[in-house]
Structure formats: C-alpha cells, structure tokens
View: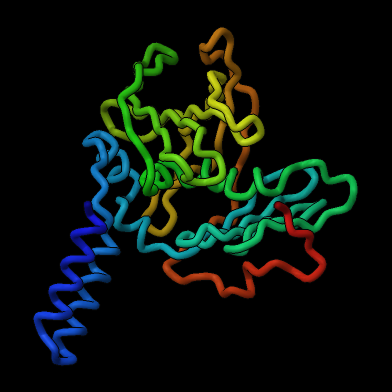
Amino acid sequence: MYKFLLFLSVVFLSYACNDTGAKKMAEKAADTMAAKPNIDYPDALDKVFANHGSLAKWKSMKSMRYEIVKEEGNESQMIDLQSRAERIKAATFESGYDGTNYWVVADTSYKSNPKFYTNLMFYFYAMPFVLADEGIKYTTTQPLSFDGVEYPGYRISYGAGVGVSPEDEYFIHYDPTTYEMAWLGYTVTFFSGEKSDKISWIRYNDWKNFNGLKLPNSLSWYKTEEGKITELRNTREFTQVMVSDQPFTKQQLAMPAGARVVE
C-alpha cells in the first residue's frame, strides 16, 4: 500500500504541472517519502532506539569501522551502513561482500564460510539499530529472567526472502526502567535452512557513546542449560570504533585481486 500511494503521489505531481519546477517538486516528494519508510515499531522498542541515540541519528550514518580483539591479532571490519557491503581483515584471511559478490582470500587452513560470517559480527555489534531494518516482524515474547531481574522483550522474525537466512529469529530484551538493551537471543539457520529451537544468548551491559550513538564496548556470550541462561562463556571486546556520516569509497570495500568468489 505504501509503495502504491508513493507511486500515485509522484504521478499526480508530475502530470498536474508541466513546468520544470513542478517536476522537481515531484522528484523531491518521492525522495522524501522513500527516505521515510512507513514502519510501525512497538512503543517500547521505539524507547530502546531513543535510549541508544535515536533511529534518525543511526540512519544518518554512512560507514562504520571497528576492531575485534583476538589473541592471534585484531580483526578489522569495515561496513557500508546503507548497502551493508563489508570488508574483513584478520590474521589468516580477508573476506567480504562488495554489494554483488561474497569473496575470500585465504590459504587452505581457512575453514569458515565467508558468506555466513559476512555481517555476522556487525549485526551483533550494531544492536539494537539493525532491528529496525525493513522486512522485520515484531511480537512480544516472555520476559527473560536473570539475577532476579525481569527483562521484557520482543521476538524478531523476517519476511520470506529477507537476507541470506530469513528463518533466523532474534529476541531483544531491555531494562524495564531505562529501556537500555540488555540481552539478545538468536537462532542460526544458515546451514540447515530450517527454523531452530536452540537459542544462544548475548549480554549487553558494557556501552559506550560513539558520535551520538550508544554502542557496545564488549559482547558477552552465556552458556545455557535446559533453555536457561547459566554462566559466562566468553567475551569479545571491540576497539578503534568509528561511525561516520561520510561513506567509504568503493575502492575501500572492493573485492581485491586474487580473491575467490563464494556462491
């Protein structure tokens, strides 16, 4: 319906006035409407976005860069926030997505799937804002209980054909008083293509402000037993964080010579 109304408004403005000024007004109206998709977020989730710097601020950003601290050497990731093109550089491999192809440069010791890994850590890191993407469905879910605190939340699912793993599900839980994001649950369906009941959990309790946005300084994965969160499993720290309203160049995110395209 939104796209149909957008089409009618542009046609009306274009044909009702024949002068150049009217045509420019029609083009501007189309651009304005396209820039503001009609997505109805749950009220509490709106408050979570506001707590973390606002969706308007997030959508004004064009690029992001950070390093993930690892014993074998830090892993750097560069992401175009509009197209989600990405370039990853680690101690033993380089991989990414240039907007058309998934690619990798690695020796025979590399065992990961670059298509699966592309945007994976970015998606975890850019919470809660990536849960405002188009094609997402929101339903309330049971509160998550941990250390005597009840965290309300939403179940996140995707429309058919959205992303490379539309069967994935996410569960966002937030502090009921401050509306700060506290937990993320997620399922992995990339390899099976089927829905999964196994939920992994990440705790978000180490935040830092970057250019007006509240983003995690670290992520902590927790163990589960019979579906309940038990103890800390491991933590990943993020450093050298940059989020900017200036885009990367195409060359910065381009597939390098000698890279192997991944189907």
